[in-house]
Image (cartoon, rainbow, N blue to C red; front, side):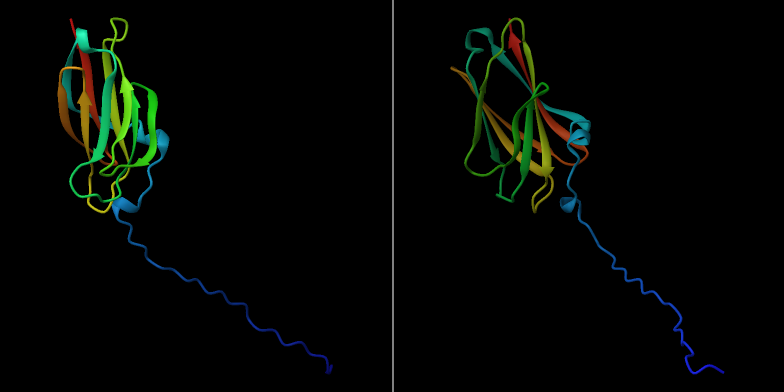
Length: 151
């Protein structure tokens, strides 16, 4: 026998696994899929033609501030992208014209904060009226406000 005998150890492998419990609030939505969620029209607002220019839209967190993050589209145009809503409003202006008499404001939940679903207060202000709309959105439905021009 040879004195240089090689000893071989059998090869082994170790597989470690850990079960992860994800809450719905931990799931990050895909931007493409977020825009394809079901649409829930939560309010219709009729805007008088005389006051259809310079419509102010403000968005606040509704109720307790719980780190809700949203995106908002006017029709298919991105107005707000991944912004946290709070007691300080996210503000922008829109107008309605005879060429564009209907506008959809779509609220998309980017996350649902610590208290699901994502809830927001939208205040729409024209020169003569103020409208308050409570919106909610989650990973299955987008909240929508429809503004339309009164002839």
